[in-house]
Length: 212
Image (tube, rainbow, N blue to C red; front, side, top):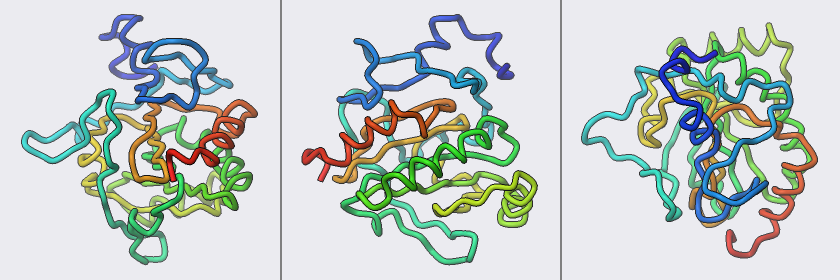
């Protein structure tokens, strides 16, 4: 259970399951918001990032119906190399904001790897943005302890600057950025990214000329 769950009404919890954009990838029914299959993952078990609450006056991505451009950023990877979102122009990019102390984040990682292996040759990239203040040592220890062998990049955002620019206050949060650089969908909570349903959704998105 999330620390803040008791403060929410049931409708509010469901409303925040999936913040839909102009066209939803996982459209299982009508409406802007939608409850998605749990696959045993705690979808409502979002972890509040108090320190990442939006800063007054900071530039950020507003929630809404109109697709917005994903804010540009540059972050180091685990090898100390700089990675720029602009380097992935023309690809569909999943931006996964996570932390080592988030249990649902760890459950998602093998699912992301499965999705990535299936579609990386078709123009899908995944950038996992770690928000741990301890940075690289904490991430490397976590990966070793969890026996995770991931081939997609892990980026370090220990100060939460990129998370703030996207106005994020929870983990895990995953944003789907289309080939045109605009945010297609924002998913709050864990999702079975390696499921047949999601695989098919990305197959469609990757072949959609509107995102090229």
